[in-house]
Image (tube, rainbow, N blue to C red; front, side, top):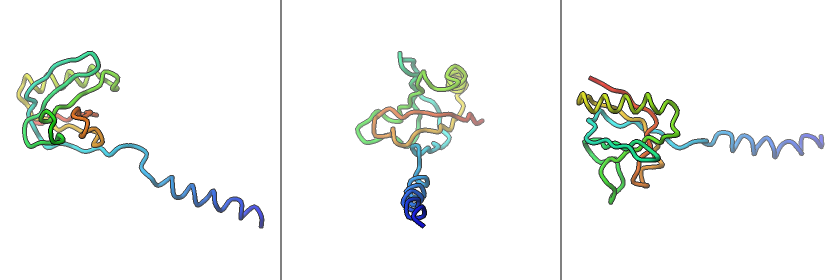
Length: 112
């Protein structure tokens, strides 16, 4: 019986905190054209046209793909090709980075 009273608080704690999200919310942009691209030492930066996703006071729709991102070379190849071919892209981004004025891109889909 004593074991039950010892384990009950642990069970409640586990149930409460295991259901909380463990990562930032990810969102998808609508289909948009890439309007500018350039590399920096820490990321590949690109801008999307269309309605503002950025926080007020930031450069409009400035996205960054960090050099530490998995498959970085493949992702920037997709972005450069989409930019050169004037293709629309949908970008998956970390919603918590929108206020920082540099929205972190996770992945993207090129559409025709």
